[in-house]
Amino acid sequence: VEPLLEWFRENARTLPWRETPTPYRVWVSEIMLQQTRVEAVKPYFERFTEALPDVQALAECEEERLLKLWEGLGYYNRVRNMQAAARTVMEEYGGELPADYEKLLALKGIGPYTAGAIASIACGIPVPAVDGNVLRVITRLTEDGRDIMDTKFRKEMTEQLEKIYPPKECGDFTQSLMELGAVICVPNGAPKCEICPLGSLCGAFQNGTQVQYPVKKKKPARKIEKKTVLILQYKDCIAIKKRGKEGVLSGMWELPNFDGELTRQQLLQQLAEKNLAVKSLCRLECAKQPIKHIFTHIEWHMACWIAESENTAHEFVWVTRERLESEIALPTAFKKVFNHS
Image (cartoon, rainbow, N blue to C red):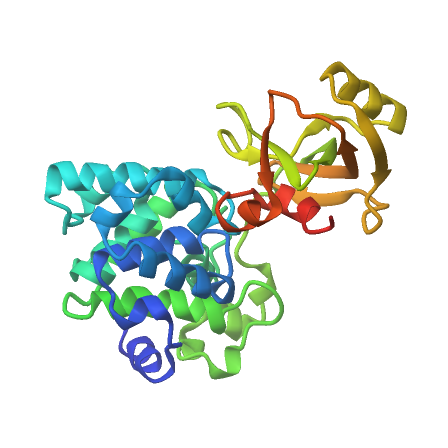
């Protein structure tokens, strides 16, 4: 434990959420960091916490503004869950996140890892936060070939870590394990074993088996879905509409789109059925090939067109480009198309 803590004190990166590690700031950072790189998160974190500095501000934020603050991070249900949890905290805990692992775990959108991070880093409670970085470090140290996606294995690792948690430095210990996995015991490319503070204890380093760990079952291949996406313009306005409440990007704004890769004639037919009089229609110049966007389980291949209409249709909301950029949260998939126009 001590070599790792000493290394962390000397080498820890300066990160905005570490400057004042309140429960709220740790919570926001950990939710943002899920499946997103640290460098990418920094500006989002600073913008979000400046606009919404505490639980009360998050609980009371109007949804459109909240989603706009989150725009670019994706996985919008995360921030919706955060707001639901913030409202619970306002009602049940007087606006302060509870300094209790089980109570944190009961809040919407907070799983074992995030609850452990908040409890240990911000509240000084000796409970582990076990994520992919931590599991990679442990499996290499111990040359453990079990599947790290197995919940029983994760539970066992959590219990083992609990036994060695330093009660007075649990926040630093949690962060030291995360940091080691992020900058030394890295996931892609060769780990930097020669400067690792745990090198002398590491079975994988001693035996040259680092690349064999961690063991992770292959995910099924993502399903590819073809889409035709349209920048539909009337005068100085662009058409958008809300997606349904089910499925991917539920309840978010979207550009007009259709399943499948439509031909020009099929697209004109679809627009005619919406009683739109189209005076021009062409493929976006920069998007002769489909634009790709990857979700967790599916991948969209989007054929992109731009159309000028002589009239509007009631199923769409018509907004200026300026308003779309400044006020409305457009998911990254559609932002990629919009940015080509």
